[in-house]
Length: 225
Length: 225
DNA sequence: ACTTGTGTGATAGTATTGCTATTGTAACAA
DNA sequence: TTGTTACAATAGCAATACTATCACACAAGT
Image (tube, rainbow over all chains, first blue to last red; front, side, top):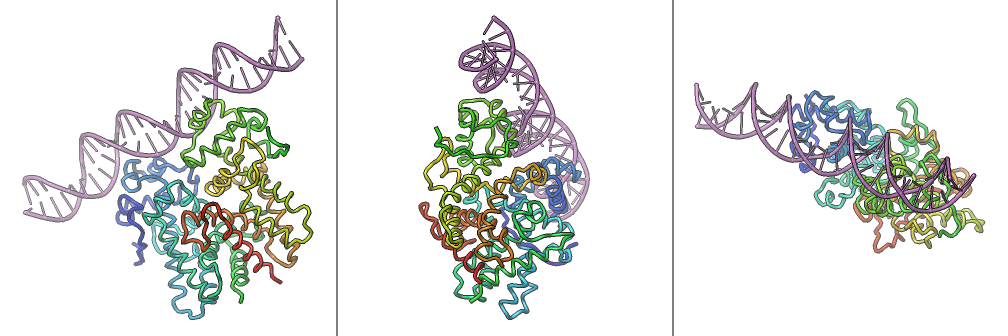
């Protein structure tokens, strides 16, 4: 059983709500593991069904296709990060301090105590780093955007942009900085491991401290008055 | 006929050098147009062959698969940007000024006079914005990286990082800033058009001036002593 | 107890995708 | 002349991305 938090997502992302049934929860659990294992391109519903001991047709009853399943996982992740940011910042007055906590949460979300048993947050974090951008670089962005498929990510961006504007109301690019923080938190974690010449930070044994420090310094510089 | 510049790329990216034959040049020309038109996921060698009036098997003689074709196009693009940066900065002494020119080149590369007749640089620019990251977010990054498949991008990053370090030798993250400039130049052009709430810049009618200004301001802030 | 519906498994089927292999032939080079 | 290269044409195959149908278990409503 989960411990109370309910991640709410656009119900057009799925055909049947996977959070409601045990088959649905299994689809979430195993798709995270399988995409992480073989990559999104090689991932198919057939392979997922075999891994789960279910059938392809059953998976198709929950998600129209693998792209929407990925979008579901990505939305789930950002909504969860958003929730973590809320509980970590609710008692902090200073916007400077809140922004620091936000950056820490972005980088270290995966280390939080697992909130929901069918989601391995640590593996999901790795998946979002490696495959996350594929969810919105698609020919159907505009259509999917009007249907609200990206609203979790956009609302989180808005929230962080708000804090940025509190820190420095004259800063002209609060949303851009916010989305850039999300992107950099992930891309530089990826670069550090796979393409180290594209960054200056190093990551070893799940120690993302250098990524966090870099994001803090960038933010401080940009928001200095 | 092309006018003299020769883009040199890792020869493991292709099976036969597409720059050498007219069929190869046709593959490049039409793949750019077709990927831009239908998106990378829907793009297949069969559709390309039909569009070109050739056959699937012939395309396979040039590229192992569509992923390597995309990587070829991406590498071509960054090598071309690198060339433009060289000719635009060669006579500029001040590193501050050179960095400004680099940013302008990143954002406006597509407006340059076409250098090679089988590459529509303007369409290629749009393709790189929409599909470019898919070239290195793949399960095979590590293997492909050791084979030098990303060396064009990494060398460009190195070059720009060098200029950044000239501007401010104490700045701790020259590579990260360089790669972030490339990413932001593209991602915020994409956001401005498709997901405007993720950014603060607007793009209309191929006017990317706001993207350029933002990148300049970010860079100035970060490199201020 | 009797229906009714819902969720799932089992099986089949289809068009497309992602390749590989073979053959014929025109051009060109030795 | 012979050999080689480049390419079109065709075939074939396993995997992918679905869609459809049927059967069955089980729970809820009457």
